Structures are given as C-alpha cells and as structure tokens.
Length: 132
Image 1 (cartoon, rainbow, N blue to C red):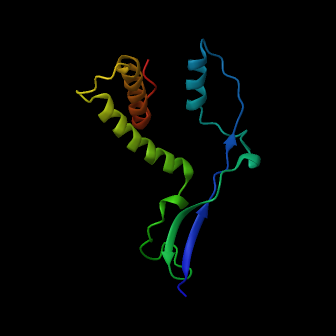
Image 2: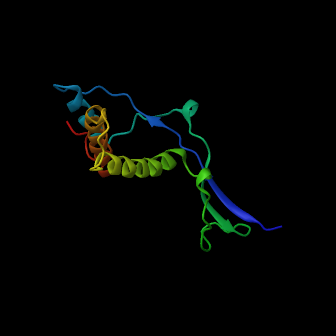
Image 3: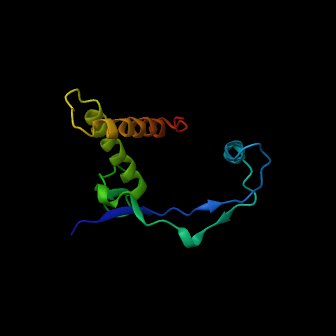
C-alpha cells in the first residue's frame, strides 16, 4: 500500500487588548492595526481553528523533498475555501447585475443592492476599505 507524508495545520488566535486615544472608532482601529508591539499578546487556545491539510507528498518522510501532490479542496483551510468560492460568486453576481436584458419588475430593488455588494466584494479582494 502506498505511503504519503501529510502536513496538517491549525490556526491559533493570538490577541492583545490595548487602549488607544483617538477622535473616532475608525481612527482607533487604524492605530491598533498599525501598532507593531505585540509584547503583551495572549494565545486563545479555546478558539483554535479546525485542522486542515497544508501539504501532501508521495512517500514516507517526503515533506518538501520533492513535488507536492495536489490536496483535494475539501481538506484545505475553510476560510480559504470560502474566499475561493467568494470570487466565483462575485463573478456570477457581476454577470447577472450587468445583464442588459434583465427587466424583472423587482430589478429596481435588487440591482442597487447587487452593485453595493459587488463594490464591497471588489474592495475586499483588493485589500481596500469598504466603499462609502
């Protein structure tokens, strides 16, 4: 029977709680994100993520010693699977929202909401702030 070396991982949330002086919550959040001092960090072992596969190689003790085998999607990290699916759904939404022949009576209701969702999704993919 063949042997496989499988690398698995889980995420361990690390957090800090710090007070920032700012005019608005937005400014306080910007200060917190820009703060590089993690000397008072704490690990949240109660909230660790599920185990997922980060690598697979044919053979015994073969990790990083040769080409990796493709990992079936259902064994990858859930958040990455969601992100990949998010891009697919965004593409479908964009096609539907911009279809010229859509004349449904409720199009005036859903089309602006679709445009807002598309703008937010594009900002997320670009690593930009949500549109105003």
